[in-house]
Image 1 (cartoon, rainbow, N blue to C red):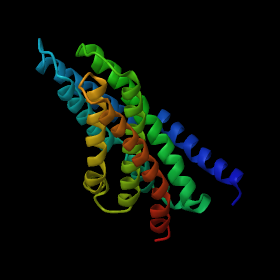
Image 2 (cartoon, helix red, strand yellow; image 1 turned 30 degrees about the horizontal axis):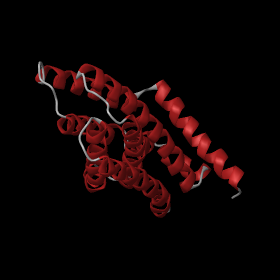
Image 3 (cartoon, rainbow, N blue to C red; image 1 turned 30 degrees about the vertical axis):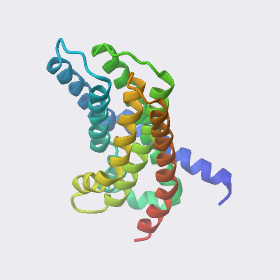
Length: 225
C-alpha cells in the first residue's frame, strides 16, 4: 500500500469512530459522567480541606485511569458486539484500523483529561506552579493511557467476557502510566523536584509512542485468526 492509501484508511476509520460516537456517545458519556461524579464526591469529601500536591495528583490520576479503562476498550469491543468486525477486516488493513481507533481514543482521552483537570483545579482551589509540566503530563498521559487501553481492547475484543478481560489485561500496562502521571502532576501542583517531574512527563510521551507503535503489529497477528 502507498502512504496515501494508509492515510485514507486511517482517517476513514477515525471518521467512522467520530460519527459513531456522535450517534451514540457511549465512550464520552461513560468517561465524562464517571469523571464528573468522582470530582463531585471528592469535593464533598475534602470540604474545607486543602489538598496537598501529591494527594491531588493521586486522586486526579485515579479518576483518569478508571474512566479510561471503563470507556476506551469499547472501540474494538463494539465492533464484535455489533457484528461489524468481519466487514472491517474485509475493507481495511489491521494497522490502519488500529491507528484510526487509537487516534480517536487519544482525542477522547485528551478532551476528557483537559476538561476534568480544569474542573478539578477550580473546584479544589489548586495552584498550578509548573504549567508546562501539567500540559506535557496530560498530553503524554493521554497518549500512553489511550495506547495501552486500545491495545487491550483489541486483544480482548473476540473473547467471551470482553470488557472484564480488557480491564484485567490493562492493569499491568497502566501501572507505569499511573506512576509517571502522578509524579509529573504533583510537581506541576507545587511539589519540589522539577527534574523528576520532567523525566516523568518524557517517560509518559515515550511510553505512549511505544504503545501506539507496537500495537498495530500485535493486532495484525490477532487479525488473521
